[in-house]
Amino acid sequence: WSSDVCSSDLTLSPSYKMLKSDSTEGQLLVIIESFGKINNDSVARLFQNTLIESFETNGWHSTWGATNFKGSTTSAELRELLNTEGSYTELLSREKSDRLESLIKIKNRQGFYTIAAHSYSKRMFEREIWWKNIGVSQALFQEDILLKNSKLKINEESPFWGINDEDAFDFLQDQAPNKKTFGYFLTLNTHLPFVQSEQRIKTGKLPLLIDRLPDISQEAKQQLSRIVAIITHIAKKARKEKWNKILIIGDHAPPFIDPKDRAFYSKNKVPYIFAYH
Image (tube, rainbow, N blue to C red; front, top):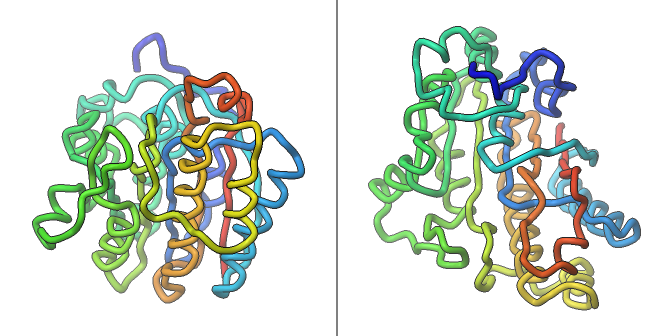
């Protein structure tokens, strides 16, 4: 690692705390784009409890927590996949990557088949290279998904037009073999600036709560509703015969331009939900 990387004194990331030493079958890590921790305690509690209820309705136990964040989406990937911080560019070197431990390599040694998917192009931040270098056995990107199903609709809710996160999750789940598997899924659609949500959940207390929030913009409400849609889809569609544990975590707070929208979220914490059965 170069001098801007520190890996020795970090507090363990949630993925390392909950999954590193666990060798039971069927584990899934999901990083949600621009998923921040809500500052208002009463709003946050209702948000959390409603999503927990969504998992429990579908046969999962679940808990909620938060962890520190620093930097970009790739920083969050380093946080959860290597329990470190720095630049992903160091991972483009196979020689340097071979000297580093990663959660993926740990899972490989534990006998897991490791598979990862992202709703966007394999060329973005050169993930096609460094995901493999940290041990991913099968990496799936927008190109791979469209090759299998060219009729899938492209999501245009953010500047990065890619596969709907729901379709990418379903594809990952279908591709995961019927054996001991560790999956990693990186979402895309809630990237800012957020245009509009085509897949909002329009019924229930949580969407109603979001619509009535007085202190954030329509863009922020739509983006938060889109996050709810993605997480709810995972809660409903995740197959218990494939996954025993699911950790869903934010990468960083959404970097809104509007100061009120930024103030709605913590400046140094992102949330996570841990589901298990």
